Amino acid sequence: MSKYSTKIPAIMQQHYHAITGLTDDFCRNKLNEEYQQLARYAIAALCRKKPSPLLSGNIDTWAAAILHALGTINFLFDRSNNPCITPSKIADAFNLAKSTISNKSKQIREMLKMRPFHHHWMLPSKINDSSLTWMISFNGFILDARTLPREIQEVAYEKGVIPYVYADKFTEMA
Image (cartoon, rainbow, N blue to C red; front, top):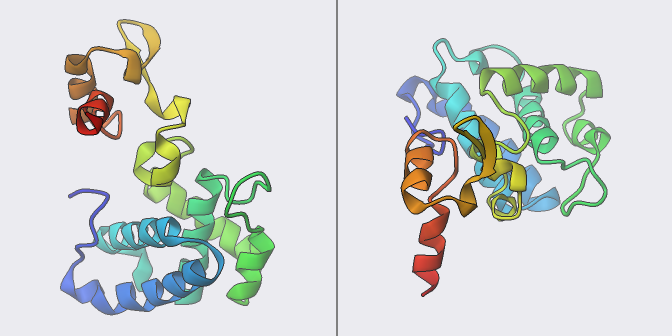
């Protein structure tokens, strides 16, 4: 199952809709569509876990923590980024303590293997410009996959190491 899927088990539909309602509203008012879509993917991925952690706990806490987790790995709290918001503003919007959100955010990042510069959870608009996203180990050397032959890019893409075959981007532009 793709991490970019919103397919979820029928038993989790109610939880999915309740949490996405909260995250969608927050993203519309304070963030953007990219965060909204990534939040939906993260919620769906958590719904597919067996057993789903979303079956216990407060939906407000889950919604805030999912946004915090995505914000953490996408540098949402860095004032040089746009959008930018503080963890306190997320906590205030959901009437929760920052520590509660931060702790749950850490659990989510571990469960979904979220980490900075990993393309699965990165804002799509940031992928092309992120050198670290494209770094791969090849024959013991760290290389920028965008500079490698198409055949190597294809293998790296098939293994999920890079977000797409960069060489195809130039084919589409021609």
